[in-house]
Image (cartoon, rainbow, N blue to C red):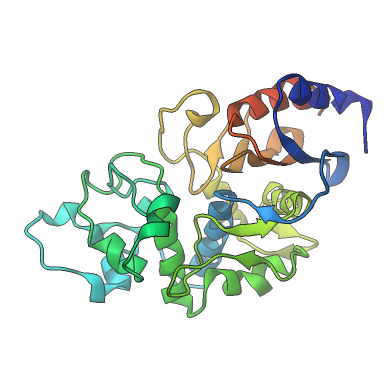
Length: 303
C-alpha cells in the first residue's frame, strides 16, 4: 500500500542504508500506509515485550491482586536473606513501582541476555534477590531487563499463571493475536523483558489499543487510567535524543508528544495521541535513532 505522501520514508531508509523490514501506519483507526521490504511475519520483538508485561500488571492491579507499592519481600519471602546492608538498600524493599519505572537501585543491571545465557542458577528470582543494591530503590533510573523479569515473576505469583497465559484471554485473543509465543526462564516464568514474537500488523493492533486508552472493539481490555499512567513520564532518564525524553512504566517518552514501546534492532510501536496515529515498525537495524529521525522527518508531516 504505497501512499505517495509516505514514499519519502522509503527513500530515507534506503539512502541511509537502514535495514527496515515492515511498516504499518494507522490513523483514525484506519490503515493509512503499509510497506514491506520483506514479508510481514512474526519476529522476536525484544524489549517491546516489556510493554506487554506492563499491561498484565495493570489488569492484575484492577483485579485487586497487586498494587504499585507491593514489595519483593512480600511476594518472595522465601528468598529474603540475612544481610548487614541497611534496610533501604535490600532487594526485598524494591516495589513494583520501582521496577516498572526502571529504578530498582542496581548500577549494573542483572539478567541481561548475555548473563541469562550463561547463568547457572535456574531460579532467576532467587538470583536477582541475592544481588546487593547500589542506590536506594526509586532514586535513579537505570534501564534493566532484570527489573521487567521480576515484574513478570511478581504477576505470576499474584495471579497463579504466567504472564503469557494470563494475557491470552485478556489481551492477546481479543486483539486477534493467536498462539503467541513468548520465551520463558528455566523455571517457566514468562521472560517479560523480551522474547515475545508477533508480526508488525499484530503490533499495530496493540498500538491502536493503547491509542484508544485500553479500549478495543467496544471492550475495555486494560483500564484507561492505567494506560494514561504508564504512558506519561514517571522518571527522568538523561539519554540522548529520543532516549532522553523521560521514561514511563515500561514505555519511552518521545519527542513530538509521542510515546513508544521499542526493542533492540529497530522494533517500534510509536503512538502519537495528538495525531490519532500509530506507527509500527520491524527492523534489523542497530541505528534506532536513525529510524526515528526518518519517522519524524518523513512520516510525521503526512499525518
